[in-house]
Length: 247
Ligand code: PEP
Image 1: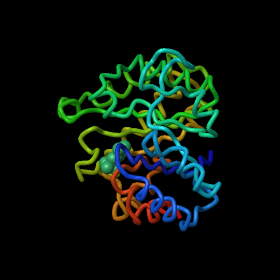
Image 2: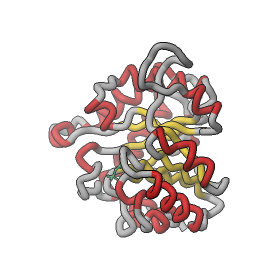
Image 3: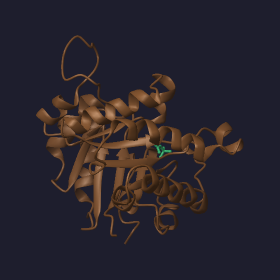
């Protein structure tokens, strides 16, 4: 089964009009290999401008959406609005949303299903905290997070899973290729046993957490790592090397 490589860039709450313009120019200068999909997620305010500026091979994602199409939900945006603006992707369940905005496993599952129903593809993030890894419950944690998504989602075709150990996000402390591969293999097995063999074979599972130009190639060589969700390095020229990491 050949799964296209997938590189996501999460800009988080960074940038300005000027920086977004520079990043668009940088991205437009990268050659995207035919076997690689690239999606960048600017802050909501810049999503449309970035989407208008990027070449068509590179897609744009929002960093969050809500579970209603419209209404009295001040500060939120809906997947229907993304669709209306020609935006095809959303990142959901990022650990920063879970931690700072108290998003539960169930809400992430609900958001995922709602976005998919609206025709927006989802990068669904999961991952354990340091104390959970140290307590040897990593697999239990990611299985619990996957279960909440699987309870809401019927069709996994437009879902990409991002395994992002919280202790590796923004810390410079990357998981070893073996640590990442072990969890990715577990997740694929989990999909086979709890969703379907098709979902296990076809769903891209990304690794995220301090990926950079120096460590991406060894990680990309692991059989169950189908790409990356990149934070800090997606704002730098080395993002170009990460895009090429499977070549
Ligand atoms: C992220 O924000 O999803 C992420 C992985 O960040 P970083 O690459 O900076 O660790």
